[in-house]
Structure formats: structure tokens, C-alpha cells
Length: 312
Image 1 (spheres, rainbow, N blue to C red):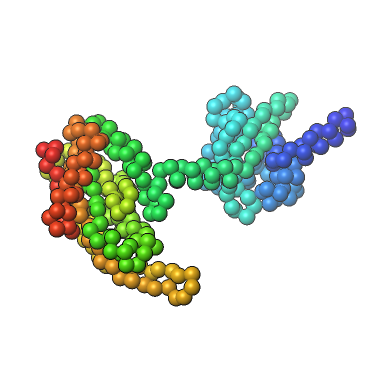
Image 2 (tube, rainbow, N blue to C red; image 1 turned 30 degrees about the vertical axis):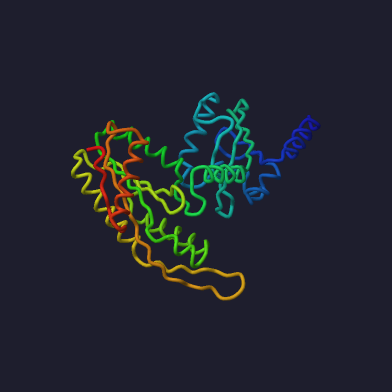
């Protein structure tokens, strides 16, 4: 019997991830050395403590409910193998984990054997891949791909709610000179600042995106059931964008050798706007109408807001 116990302990210590065995009362009964290393607790600090000690406080109540249900019925869908959870170290730092659970029936009740794998790097890699796929690398605004997806969602929503949306196509009027005179680093700084100002102009439910170059788009969601009122709301936001983006830009250009230089650049914006509802046209139509309206604004001398009448 002692040999079997020794083998079990050796197997437990051979597992490269933390292993935590919880008794029928939800208290930690057994841990391996890897658990101590990862979580920062000594074995003595963990044994006899509720398993929720390894869970952030804000999630403990939910975890307790799921664990209790799992111990009553190990086949419940509230817990099981391959769980994505958040764990908490002794120092309070949180990290993403994948937890595999196995029930072990005993006369006293069901034990839970948990193998806990730190998946922080995998989650970071997933987030990076997602970011590269759906966000502009320079400005961190949604890119054309993500914007098109959100436009589709907005149009589908408008079909249900009968509320209008608005799409704005923006093109900077005086972008090329900053590149020509001060280089692409200055142009990049200008685009980043434009993006930051755009974020401040729109609501949480709206989307500001970069289409490429010095072209940006803004989509206003869930406006009004009345088209005229929706157009009025869109005009207010478009005017705020036009005003804020037309304020002078102070751009600090860093140099590898020598002191940094700060330049001031004035850059206005031409804005084309289309107010739409789901049955006005396709996504391509809405984008085309807003783009055409933007060119009308630019042909009028720039620093203008032009509303499309293509869908009226």
C-alpha cells in the first residue's frame, strides 16, 4: 500500500502543470510542487483552504456555485474539461488558465482532480492575431474588414428596430504636405492623432475606422426612427468631428541622433454623410454613397460636410 502511495505521489510531482485535488467540502486536500511554484503559496498555506483561494474574489461566488453543482453531477455542463478560467496568485496577479477536471468518487463524497495549465502566452498570441486581422496597425482603429462586419450588423439591427444609421466617409484635406515636408514619421503621427480625436467624438455604440491612407469612416448606430431627426443627429456629430479634426496638430518627431523636433500642422477634413436604413440599399451602396458625398465636399473646397441624396 505504501508503494502505491509513493507511486501516486511521484506521478503527481511528474505532472508539469499544477495539480490540485479538492475534497467534497471544496477544500484543497492535495497539491503538487508545481502548484506552489505557479501560485506562490506554500503547500502548508494551501492545504485545508477553499479552492476559491486560487480564484479572483469577483469570480469566487460563481465558481463556488459551479463547483458545488459539478460535485453533485460530474456530467454537468457548468464545469468539465477544457475550461477557460481566470486564476489568481498569492500576490493578487491574475492569469488565464485551462483547467481539466476529473471526478473521483469516495465514501465521503466526490473529489475533484484539477490539472491547471497557464495559457497566458496562448491568449496573448490569439489576441495579437485577432488584432492584426481586424485592427489598423498604426492607429489601432478597426480596419476595413472589421468595419464591414459591423456595418452589416448595424444594417441588420436597423431592420429590426426601424432606426436609422449614418455612415460618414472622411478624407483629410491637407495630409500630403506633412509627408512631403517632414517625412512619413510625421504623417504617421498625424494619422494617430486624427484617430485619437475621432474616438473622442463618437459614442460607445458607434464605430470609427481607418480604411487606409488618410481615409477614415465613422458609423453611427441606433439613431432615430425618423430620418430627418437622424440626419440632424448625424450633422451634430459630423460638425464636431470637422471642428475637432481641424484644430492645429502639434507633432513631436523623435530622432535617433539629435533633439526631437515639434512641428505644427493644420489639416482640415472633408466629410460625406449618408443616413440609411436596412432597405435603402446594400452595404456596398451605402459606402459608395458616402464616398461620393465626400468627394462633393472636397470639390466644394474642403473642410465641408456634404450629405448624400442618393438614397432619398
